Image 1 (cartoon, rainbow, N blue to C red):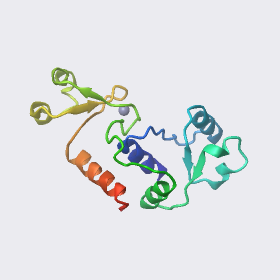
Image 2: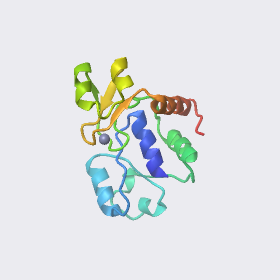
Image 3: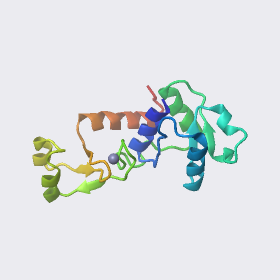
Image 4: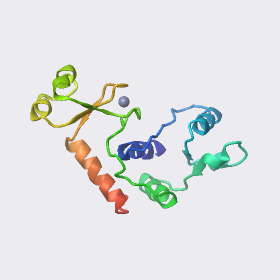
Length: 152
Ligand SMILES: [Zn+2]
């Protein structure tokens, strides 16, 4: 569930690492501390008895809308901070692909998107391409709704 929250934070443009399953809490906390990150968790125990408790944010909500609302209550989040500026899969900042470079990514981008001349963003880490298709438009509409306090 927090993975879903993490992907929405990335969609909004926040620099968000998502822990892989089974990664030891101690290492994750140490990394978060080193990189000056907040550590979002639903595990109350993590806020107690550890050296990094000041960066731990324990969320109580049991579903994604609840977590979105709770986090927005704790921090001044702008869900339209920089929409789709980061890769949803790996958090890497996206780069704009110029027209002439579309040729290099033709296997990633449908022909009609290429020929329409619309902006295509590209993740150099995992080679995913993003453009303003229906999926991105739907996500953008939800980010706008989050800023209005609508979480469903
Ligand atoms: Zn990526």
